[in-house]
Length: 256
Ligand SMILES: NC(=O)c1ccc[n+]([C@@H]2O[C@H](COP(=O)([O-])OP(=O)(O)OC[C@H]3O[C@@H](n4cnc5c(N)ncnc54)[C@H](O)[C@@H]3O)[C@@H](O)[C@H]2O)c1
Image 1 (cartoon, rainbow, N blue to C red):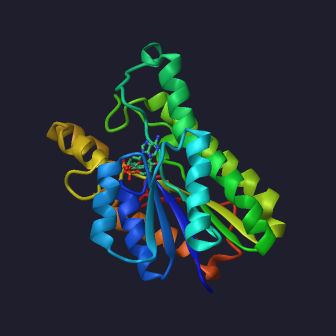
Image 2: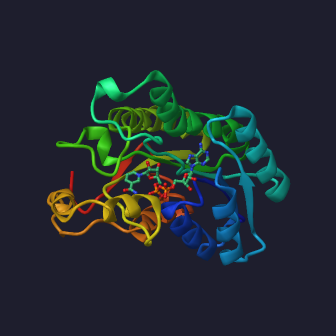
């Protein structure tokens, strides 16, 4: 079966690893990210005719529509949506007093509203064809984290948004189950991508004792890799995973 996917946040650490997996699985792919330079680099490194890109801010409904239209123009249909774009915003915050409304709204829009907008745009086509795969991105932060903020800037807003994505996934999976569409979310623990990627950079900048504290809860003693996450995504979007839906799947080496 011909498969076509939209991947948001595609120029980031997990997005790049996911792209490699999907290319190997034979997907047509539209990469979406707001970082034009990084997106160009990713496309150049992939050099596959079936990989296209679109620069968009996923919090902007017009740009989301533009991305979905582009995918439809390139592939004729979208049967897979992977909502990776997300994060804690640009400002490191310590407590609730540090979070202004602008930052709060931004973090909710970046993680939750973007997932809603893309899902709403692709669901009708998936329903029509009786097949779809949607994967969202939560975080172990949905369950809170003790101690001072580490790699996540707007932690309280981020935890709220990532918990909301578990609820969104549970409900939406039930809403579209009869249409052959599965909706799942990945719940990553600390994931360290290649050197130079965003979270890896923040982790590497922490003092040794902070790094050790972050890794304490991981029974294997290591953080996850982008490939660990991409493998889970690749499975959830496969045709074989059609009876797995509404799941919040930790990829955290038994941290939770
Ligand atoms: N890395 C981790 O430790 C970790 C842990 C738990 C959850 N997550 C989640 O996994 C996902 C990917 O994480 P990552 O480590 O690859 O992050 P990353 O920062 O490396 O990648 C995020 C990508 O999203 C893009 N992006 C940010 N805002 C955007 C916007 N408004 N419009 C379009 N694109 C935008 C960025 O340009 C970047 O390429 C995120 O949702 C993150 O919250 C990551």
